[in-house]
Length: 303
Image 1: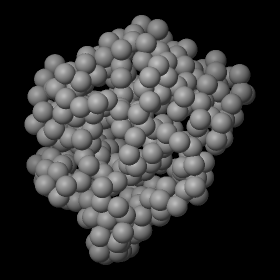
Image 2: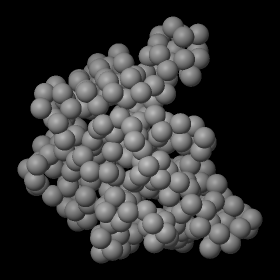
Image 3: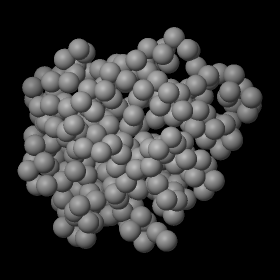
């Protein structure tokens, strides 16, 4: 299987684990079987919204889900049977340093589902702790090599570049200024570092960028050295719909940005309203479908 992925890709991610437990439900590990079932049922609402959006016109061959094994194993199997693109996370939830959810047994869990994409979320600042960065890169190379050897699932890499204290101090503690003026170049450096360490994503999942020139620089980094079919998608970061639309519109006209992975902006409020009795299950499904389809339309109509 040739590495890289450059077809349109519209992902609805709901692989959240810790945030679902604590913020959505107010629970903490260990969960009871009933609590686990309740979270799985909430994720089924999201999947039903996804399917409704596809039924309503989002192109099936471009539509995919990202959901975890812990609460979404049944959904992963159903989505594969339904012919959708699937993605499943490999990282341990809520960790500052990347590590495998299932430790040294990680690859058996990937093989059990053979998703279209194995996804990792990684916090990597090139000016961060070099020991931690090196340790993360070694684990990620192990995963990258294993996926390439198995030739079944591709690697989707969600890159987060949190500000180091000195970086944030240089912009007087202004997170927006960091995101605009420092983060883009740090992302390019992080991509180079990881590639040089032998980590070879097929798709980079990228925090939203405000400037087209920064989107172009990210694509150039992702595709350097003959990696011509590597794709980039925009993540939502839980931002409001207006901000996410801005990021998607900025990226959508840049060759190499093939789509998005927007989750909480699609489903969080509809689920909160449903759980709180403010709307019916059917209304929550319809609203999730509407939001996801709206973001897909941005890429469908980009010129």
